[in-house]
Length: 213
Image 1: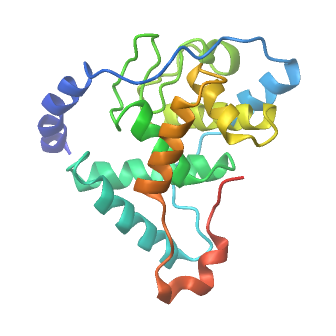
Image 2: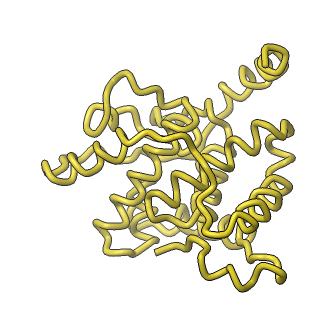
């Protein structure tokens, strides 16, 4: 493990200064009920795991997504750890993991140390005011699982506000509500790069796959 960390350190330092696409997500007052529900979601910490009714589907998904992500993250252990966390946190929030992969591609390019000009941080470019509202200042938004948990919880919140309207929810997420560029980029990345269908041999189990709501 020590050798792995020494190998990855220079790579991480370079990524830490890479630009991010994120806009200026607006800080808005939350009702007590909404803040409490989001806070419970953030506080419910479990070890990430693949969430599939059929384990064969999980392994097929992980293998395919790992191949697609290889150029961005060459290290197989880091790649599978990230993908497992993405699938777990997105499914837990009722989101399609493929959508979240598309969002991360646009927001940070899979750079967990990315910082936008507006100050958004990490893989899903979470604004630093969120821990004050639904978490704790001790939460590290550069931590992989923490960032994904916040990002998925926030996107779920915006989808609920917009009654399932994905384009408006994505606009809120990016701070560009009403403008088509960002939602088009995310949905385009989702459909062109990350869309996934179960292998034919596993089609019968395909109905259990998480899907966008």
